[in-house]
Image 1 (tube, one colour):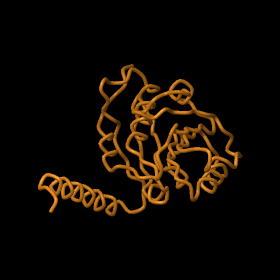
Image 2: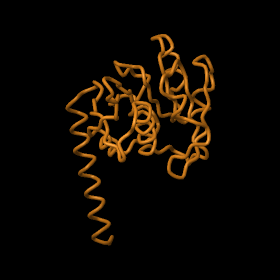
Image 3: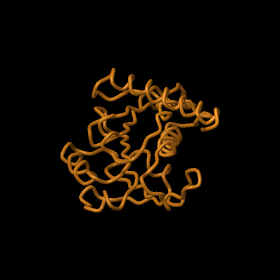
Image 4: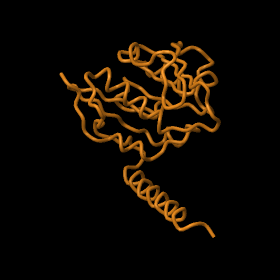
Length: 193
C-alpha cells in the first residue's frame, strides 16, 4: 500500500489535471490566452521579458527522451531572438544549442527540439507545420497573432506588456508533454520603461 503522502500527491495532481481539462474543454479549440507573466525580478525590457517567458515555457516542457543539449532553432524574421537565445545558454541543467535555420530546411523536425519563429507567411507556416508533423518539437512564435496550428505558444507583445496564447490542438499533437503549471506564467507583470 502506498504511503499516504504519496497517495495525497497523486490525488492532488489528478485534481489539477481535471480542473485544467475542464478549463480547456470550456474554451473549445480556440487558443487559450494567458495574461502577462510575473517574473522575479521583473524584467528591465520587453526583450528580457520575452527571453524569460520562452525559457519558462521550455522549463515546463518534457520530451519523450532526455535531451543533451536542447536544440533551439530560430526561423523567420525574429525581433527578440538575437540577444535572448545564445548558443551555450542553460535552462536548468540543460545546455542550449541555438542555431538559425531556414524555413525551407527539411531537417527542422529531426534537428530541432524547440522552434522559435518570427514573421512567417501563411505558406511558410504551412511548411513549418508539415515539417514538424510527427516530431516532438515545442513551437513558440513571436509573430502569430491568430496562434495558428503551426505554433503551440504565441507571444503577444503590446505596450511594453508580454503575454502569450496557447494553441491546445497544437499542444495535443506535439509529442511533447507540457506541465499544466505553465499557465502559472500567466500572471501580470510589466517591464520597466
